[in-house]
Length: 568
Image (cartoon, rainbow, N blue to C red; front, side):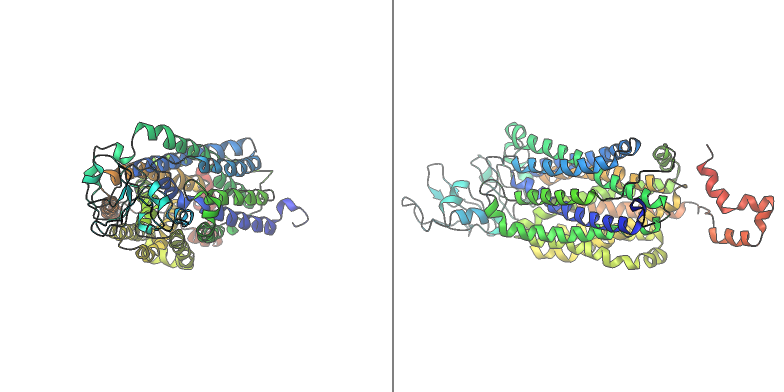
């Protein structure tokens, strides 16, 4: 076996582990912090939702298409190389997108650049304070004054004010920018601003006061033609290059192991990806906090994430040279995806599972898109945000040894229900977030709301699928259905945040999940129990020579397994 490097299984698995680890670090450099960077560009919540919805939609539709073409024309290695090389360059396009003129300033970097100013300008009088508000704003006449009507704990300022004063804005002001619009001073604030990046601050508690004021929320045509359209083009182009990588790599490795009957060693590779994500999300956040002010002399913070992504993509490109891609492949039916789709429409259990995964995708996008905004408004650093993500990933790894016990004790549907309940509890908890550290305990529940839930979904799919359709059906749930839910949730979530608040979005998703959980359990209990083939019993019957007769042959497990596969 080792004499032929093509079928060196140990070497192939070692390269695959390293590749998954590096790709996990690569994705962690940007993906968790992308919406935070879009906020720094000056985009309000609705347009961030549109961008993320487009990103999820492209991934859901484009990845399977490219994976099919790469397999049909035997160009998988070329696709892996092109995807890694192209995405490394495309990610830098986001770093070139200019922020809006009203985009939020960078308090730490602004403070370092303005630290040389140790006194106010000579013409400026002592700064008055209104209700303890710490923010500053350039007055129309050129003077500096504190804005009226601002409660303690919130702040606003201007680019000019940040550059001419030595005072450092508190972290809670990060991402907030005031404007001279007429209606901005009329809105009272009772919570840290959330709709950052527009031309007026917004608030989770009272953003509805700005309804109909499109200019105040950054929805003007001028903003759409500039930062938004450039960001949309960059994100879509970047996702077109990135989306096929994971599916093509997984299919290549699985077929390689399947050819040598070693697919049992395929199941543990996902752990290496989670380890890469955990290390990468903390590492890039720590590096960004230390180096960003030196790398980014102008523009928004966060560009270092894209530089790190490009560097790690180059490293993954080097590893992909040795990634196992099978040259010879067994003939397989080309209609497996169509057959998997027909299975979903013909089985009530799969239909219920489809709606469940779709709703989970929609609710999860609400957390992924705006949780970091919420934490930033409460003074969190990127390192704490990265650590919160790592907590959930490491919890999933630590829970994995109990996977079999969990599925056996609770059943697959019971584990799905537990995952839905934990996700609903997380959303409800986040809606009452009171401090940056308060998000950390709830992140531990991600081990169940994400890990255990997907284990149950995968086990259900494998149980309900016909032979040779398990992987296409699983890929459909992971890609099309979950990605479609994430896309719709992103599109809708941004506008809910604009017209209501982030707390309303989280609570609405919580209520929706709980209602679906009650309906799911009610319908599931009324479905007839499906009779499955008992392979152990059939093997015992075969050993007792019952398969020698015509009736025994009819029961033979191999015949039953192959009949449906080759019935056509």
